[in-house]
Length: 132
Image: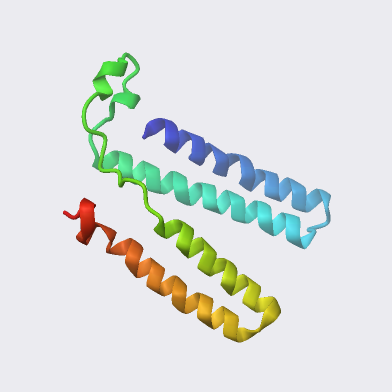
C-alpha cells in the first residue's frame, strides 16, 4: 500500500500547486483551473484512503523490499466466472441513451430492463451452477 499511497498522494502535491500556477498564468480561467483543483482533490482523497488502509492492514508482500514472488503465492481472492449480465445491462443502458433522442418512453423501458438485469447480476450466485 505504500507505493500506491505515494503515487496518489504525490499526485495531490503535483496537481494542487499546478492548479495555482495555471490559474495565475491564465487569469483564473474557470474550466481548466477548477479541473486541476478537482484532480488534486481526487488524488488527495485516494492518497488519504490508501494511507488509512495501509495503517489498518498487515504489510503485503509487495511492500517488502526484499520480497520474492513466491511470498505472494496462495489464494488471492474470490473471482466470479464469466457472466452475461454486464452485456445485458450495457444494452439496456444503450436503450436509455437512445431514448434521449427518440423519446422518454424508450428511456423508461431501458431503465426498467436495466433494473431487471441488475437484479439478475446481483443474484447470479444464488442459483444455477455457481450457487454458493
